[in-house]
Length: 445
Image (cartoon, rainbow, N blue to C red; front, side, top):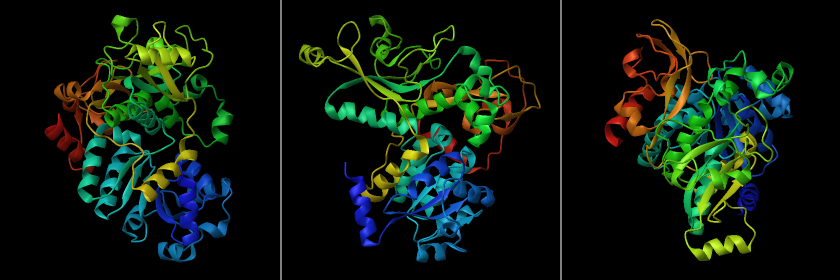
């Protein structure tokens, strides 16, 4: 509980944590808006395919132009300024940079960036959870082999949920379930970038003002992102996932203890020890008060009468039996909280969550009838959405991971609602992402 004090100390000593950021989009910009006011962290460089867009975003969040005018990374190190470039390799090769933040949102590129950073002895904070969902365990093992840290991004829901699970276990509680909230109705599964803002609750003007990417936000709405983040939570905590995908039961925060019990006790879970997502809408589309849409939660069990009595004595909201309760963080602030990961990794050499196993996977599910010859456009697009499955089932049935369903051509027709399989696509087998995924399948499933 003293990260800020330690950051101030690093500042006073003249040894700030030196960071390189790959990807200057929404998440990265949110981080940059905060880091400018923090001691002890120096963003040496920012790499993006569009340096001019990064510069525009820096101006948007109030960075003085001279603060990001360094002509080279070496100059940025020496002058405590920032260099903006389109060359991500220059960041990972710069010897003074300690931590690479991968925030491109492109899972194929993210795997390459992470592996490259490990080879250069750099710690990695991976914002691109799409990559973590299909090969995060492999990335964690590669980091361990290299003697560096691989971490989830604090501020995103997986890291926050992992923190709550760790709180519960370190306190001595049995974890029954954990997860996040969402706004969900079954027909959202078919949403596209053309329909996302109507469902999301923003106007096109608000989306434009915020420089929001409709494909990225549609990945949240159509169920892909909840599946991706639930996979990351499961792989980071050792919890299991539903056999046939997320159920999205509707409920308020106070409903969670009743919902998140095994079925035989009146809940929705196949068994204790699961990941799930709670919807903020009733099945007829009405908003539920006191929802958890933007937050995360953990459900714990009082497995002795003493603990049950403690819940009662301290007026804890529980299920009707008095044995199940929830702790939660109602809001997550995305990139505005990312400095917690930077401080944790840079000061304590401790990740804010990482995959400890390969228990969960996210498979590509056809949004509509797909014809041979069509090109899949990945999460949030027009062709597929993400479905959460146990990794053992996904691998056994040769389901195509959503993270690899980008710009690949179908060889076979796939019916709406059916998973796409490896045999249905022509895919580049030379990429780092493909090779790492296949290595994980062969070794750990």
